Length: 190
Image (cartoon, rainbow, N blue to C red; front, side, top):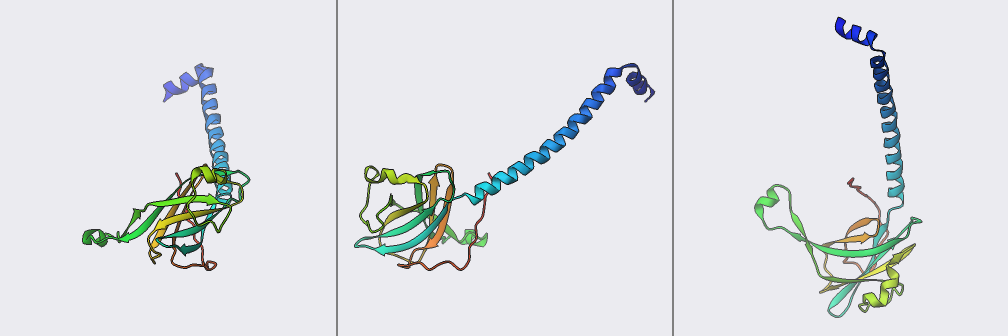
């Protein structure tokens, strides 16, 4: 211990180095607090400006049905629609998976989707017809054509846009949808 004290008193640069190290630790602590506050503010802004994605109605056609969805973009930042994946909830028949709590599976289904300005347009549209409607500035209507007949199972719509992703899980059995009585959103941190 005496050797360390002698070394510190005989070498003034050691004392300066210890002082600089302590100041660096204090600066690091305050920078961490500022960084954490900045992260929380940015996360709150991103959550307030995230897309809203809702089911409007479903119409049965001859051999398929068309689901009308709406995308709201409250942000001042324009979004571009990239893809829409649709999954159907199917029950699992595996007894062992049901024992551990997995009772259903999301089966991808083949769909055709298009953004539109004409909400009464129920015929399938193609990219060359509707590419201008991929640009979401405020509200955009999406039409999804699914083969078969309307059923009461749940569907999961996974929408990917240029800066965000949204998942909507809903039943599509009604022709008109009522306003919801409850709302819950879960955020997943990456």
